[in-house]
Image (cartoon, rainbow, N blue to C red; front, side, top):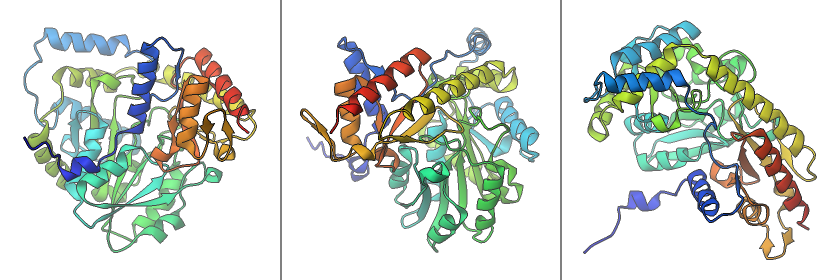
Length: 398
């Protein structure tokens, strides 16, 4: 039997975040006291009123095939969100609901990009962007954002990276992994560059939009004159503690939603009917649970910054959103302890897992090889314990 796999699958790398989370769960299952800072999901349960909506959907027999693009009422609520917040003029035809924001991003990439196209991606970036671009046959062009600018790029960096092959700009704000947020004035400055290059499609991954500590929504949707080449990606996973419900969506021009509807119809069809009804309730009712969750994450953010700033040799940013922080550990490269020789952030991640019983993710996976990423979507007590362990383990290196 020929068991040879396709070249496209063989080229793909396993997600580092999922790999570390899997390893942490395995060690916990073996009885080890591992504190997991690698997982990227809220440590809160889905609010009761959202769960009740799903139960009602089951009892009402909303269990048959949905439309490929999602239920019209859910798409209308999503369009209305952007119309109200940013004075847009979307209707439900501008919305495609998918099985998670990851599928929404994939739909956009596979519908737009061809072999030889270039995609500009600021670093640090989400771990799946390179592999998604790779599947399309396009080339990813990376622009590095520095700690001094909270890991965000400048308009000049963007303009310098554009070539006649540039077809897409793909980024996240609030950012996974840095927590950086492009505020309104920064988005306006980037828009000035895009206006010079009318063939570039902007894909803004805004899945963490509700977890924003600087006040007021910051979305590319507010740049209304770029509407015909702007794709907004969002979903309910992070802002409503609904990671397992698998509902994401895109808001995009009609020429793209039509293409994505065709693509999704062949690959997965519409997402779960029960999850869609839960998402409808999440997006159309009281946001108090979401705001409480955001405020709790902000408290933890402050703990992270305070505690890491006290550890000699590390540097960290102050995240403006999401629930991640990047910790620059390059000071420890070239050092060792026992059997552990530290040459890069991969080595640091494994060292902290084995010596400190703390699971983190190497920054290499996010395009910031000098860093590790930690998630503070964990209880305050465990967060403090984890950072204390990290500090103790790093202190052993010499």
